[in-house]
Length: 295
Image (cartoon, rainbow, N blue to C red):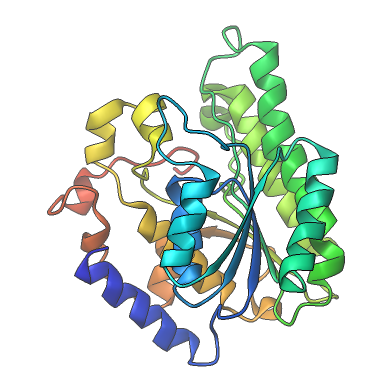
């Protein structure tokens, strides 16, 4: 992490107040073996949070770095407690087991992060039925089922949050037509989250989505969105992690049902210099690659 990023994190902590911390809080996250999910977990671990991860990556992938076990090692090294749970967010039994194991290990659940997501930007005639179903099952159904399974625990939490890494609803011809199958899956994640926010607002469970203005330097960007050229014009996962931290340390009744943008959240928290988040140091903001779904 660069000096600018550390300064941004400290500024967020100051703005949120000394009493708002993730120390001792328990997060149940889908995925998290690498990329944005792992960055969010490591930021929470720096406070001393407990991180339970439900992910499939039990063994190394030939093209992707990291497993659920290496992620757990990094979380512990960062100061948190880790509970790696090998399973599939598409499997109801695995979800039930993840909630029970998390509750049994840490005594409850304070936060659910819907991080697991499948991306396929194929046009409709090229998208296979299998991949369409996979995106619906992981992105939409997985978000709903994991969040729902944890709600009894969230109702007992002091500051319960559901955070889904999904875009604001922008169902224009541009974005629906660009990759219809993927757009449906990501907008579905958002609709699930907004629905839960409305349904459980009176009980004090916050549910929000979070999405960046620029691409983030992850394996998905490397492999699917343009390779090294787009990676070099992206921001690091730490910008997402700092924004997520700002959301999750906000009192739940003060921010729910919102479709949040990473940079807006950080600006509201007092961070105005994003230069330290550039994947390639020195890249000016106007040369960064814009993420999809935002006009």
